[in-house]
Amino acid sequence: MDGRKRGATRRAVVIGGLAGGLAATLWVVPARATPEQMRAAIRNVVGTATVRQGRVELDVPPVVENGNTVSLVVTVDSPMSATDYVKAIHVFNEKNPQPNVISAHLGPRAGKAKISTRFRLADTQTVTAIAEMSDGTFWSATAEVIVTIAACVEEF
Amino acid sequence: MARPLINVPAKVKRGQAFEIKTLISHVMETGYRYTTVGARIPRDIVTFFSCSYNGEEIFRADLSPAISANPFITFFTVATESGTLEFKWVGDNGFSEIATATIVVE
Image (cartoon, rainbow over all chains, first blue to last red; front, side, top):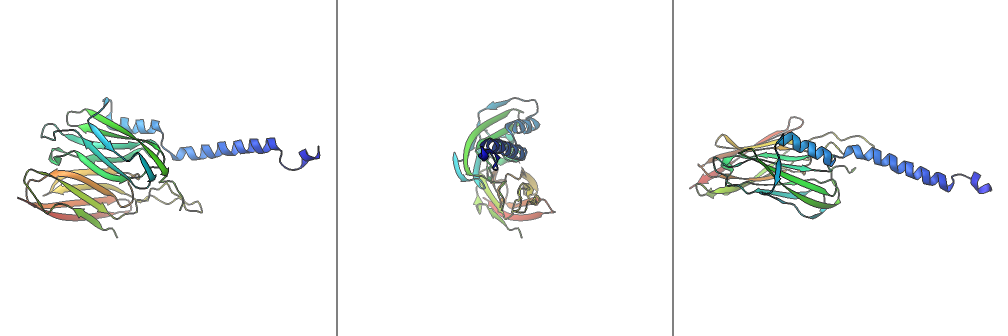
């Protein structure tokens, strides 16, 4: 019975470990945007309009080794005429510290509704691209990206 | 010092859409990183990019910390007249950079 008085018991270690794990989770979570925050950011852009799937092609690699530079190409199916064109392309993410990626504003002079850039991903997550058309409709596409080395929050 | 790189075709046919590629050297520090001693590294990013063709704006973009270091942006425009394309980047801490490219339309 002497063993119980000697330092930490197994129970104490298990409880301590659980508490520590919980504390770490609580501490980390606020640094990340959530899918709810992404939805709020999308609401901010589209207002009360409904966002339909289609007409947008979101080209991101399915698996990336390094989340610091992920190539992103968004192409929208549009005639790009003076009366029917893409006004803007917005890209959102779920789990970076904040939900916005880029908001690009085009016009009828673009000729082709296609943009590309390179962006960061802090975790494996879903990326959403939304196109705002000149007639006020919104179209979207989503893509899942698996990230093996995260960006944004690492120490250096 | 930020050094912009612009890639546009030297000659384009009138009415044809051509691709413009831009890149500027910039750290794009997110503001979400910490040093090993726990100090937060302040945000330093390019927040705005625009391109005008003979004085008329044809493209603009709002950037976020999610854009990679050395922001690379490509887009299209239709060739109308020969002239100049002016590119502008604006960012935190008074960052501002302008670059131009000439385009010949035949």
